[in-house]
Each structure stands twice: as C-alpha cells, then as structure tokens.
Length: 427
Figure (cartoon, rainbow, N blue to C red):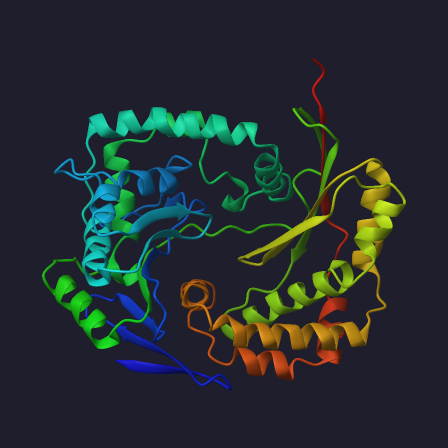
C-alpha cells in the first residue's frame, strides 16, 4: 500500500494496485460519519467503436449502450433487487453514465464493509438475458421521452451535436430509440467483457474506515474471482476539425421565454497529466474572471433588459477539444450573443481579479478535504482525466502566474462558435 501525500495540505490518500490491475484508493477521514465507495469504469457513452476483447477488428455498437449496460447491472440472477440489498444495510446505492465513465456508488453510516462487498460483487456479476434486455428497452425509451421534455437538458446535449463533427462526444449519453432498439444481450456482454475488466476500473473508498481492512477485503474478493488477462483496449481515434459542425439552429419548445445557448469550440494540443490539468485551470480562471459573481457582467445585461434570468455556463474538455457553453433566457438574442462574444474575446484582463481567483482556488483546495465525498470524486476524476492523482494542486495554483495565464489565453481562438435559439411553440 502506497501513500499519496498531498503537497502543502497534510493529507494522505492510500493507493494499491491489485494483481488483476484494479487501482484501489482510500481517503480516510476520522470522525466523519458518512462512508462510501465509487466503483468506476473508464467507459462512457462516447465509446461506441472499438475492438472487443478476443476479436480482431473494430466494431460499431449502438449509441447509448454504455448507459443501457449501467441499467442492466442492477439486475441479478437471484431476482433480489440490488437496491433492496443495500437498503437492508441502511445504505443508498446508485450509478450514472456520462461521456467518459460509468460510476457505481453507495453511501452509508453503518455496515460499510458489507456494502463494499455488495458493490464490487454486483458490478462484477452481469446477468443479461434476451427477455430482460427487451424489457429494459421500454424503460429506456420512457427515460428518453422525459429527457426530450427537459428543455435545459435538451439544449446542453444539442450543443455538443452542433459543435462536434466526428468526435463521438456529440451523441447523447442515453442514445435514441432507434439505437436502443438494436441493443442485444450479446452486445452487452461484448462491451462488458472489454471495459469492465479490473485493469480498466478504479475503486475509491472514503470515510472513517480502516484503510488496511478495506483494501484487504477487496483484495480477497478479487483473488476469489477469475479474470482473463488483457493488454490494452483499442478504441477508434477521431480527428476532430477546428470548425463547428453547425453554426446556428432555431427550434421550437415549450418555453415561457426565448432561450439562447452560445458554445465556443477551442482546438488545443493533446495533453496529459499536469499539463492537461493546467489547461483546465486556464479555462476555469478565464470564465470566472470575465463572467463570475465578482463581475458586473450579468447585472449589466439584466439592467439593459437583454436577459430575463442569470447567465449559466459550463465547459468540457475531451481529447483535443474544449467546449465552453453559455446559456440564458433572453429578451434580445442578438445583444446577448454579442455581449458574450465581446467579453470572452476581450484582451484586457484584470490582474487583481486573477490573483483573487487564485487565492479562492487555493482556499477551496484546503476546504475540499473537509468533505471526503468531494475528495473521493476528485480522486477518480483525476485518475480518469490525468492518469494519476494530482497531489500538488495547491502548488500548481500558487505558482501559476499572470504572464503564463495571459500568454495561454492569447493562444485560444474564439472564432468557432455555435448558437442554439429556442422559442415557444405556437399552440
């Protein structure tokens, strides 16, 4: 068992890589009542074209299959529902799929070790039949209908499709009814056997637990199971262009006020580790300095009656693409788009705001270790995105200087953007 010492924080994360390749992490927090674990596979909805284990060519699978697979793992051969198993221990269990991972997790106050074994066992014991796969299709289709009715979710997912041309992150995590109808039991097993191998997974535990006992429990559990050895997983590569797929789209939805999303597509070098982390830091600081709560940007738009509600934003970083999305209910679509465009391209940057934001981030790193749930999420996100736990985050923030920030900002090209305009359906 290794200790990952978090620089300048007097915090330790325990790590051990098991013989079958499973990376296990523990963040121990003495006196914290809540305990839990995340069992994560490096497999999300963007992976639809790959070479299945034991096969010799790349195969295209139906879109939405990673999410479908997540649903099916909650079904067991003994007909005892997974949710009920955790409920009897006083625990909550759930899962989610996004573009890059599928995450199974539980939280509890008591019976942690029993729940830990249940988590690892149900994820590693798939049970797919022709009958239960067909039944699930109807459930997924109902979920698709619900997401179609959620305007904010529709707009967020639609922006990926407008911006991206070939990168599979353009497709919805849940898939569509046509693709869902094509999923078979055999497809699920081929995907499962490829991506749910322990060497492609991460187990993160947190709370007031005995780190040695927890890791030994997992080690014993894994030693009692057989896994075929795999060397690597071959996934199809995509060359995404700098230009957006579609510059403008207008749709009609059930909205009380017109809505606008503006998405910027930034082509950046392919980076890993700390360099990739610093690129995200650049975007994080940039958005906060220009649009954050300490600026007057939102208030000015409200005062000028350009927007009806506040401006929301988000960003995603995958492969060599950064996607930054702004959204608001608007009174003046064109004025809103121009205001976003002018602000994000503005070359004059407030140095005092930069230094203040740095201090906020550094304080946030320290405070995050007060909540082991936050730390556990950081651990698995770090490992998936950067290939390791970034243990010198505080130092990176502290040493990131204004010149480096402004020099990197000048390299960004904000000329490639997509706009989605949503107005009310006529009755």
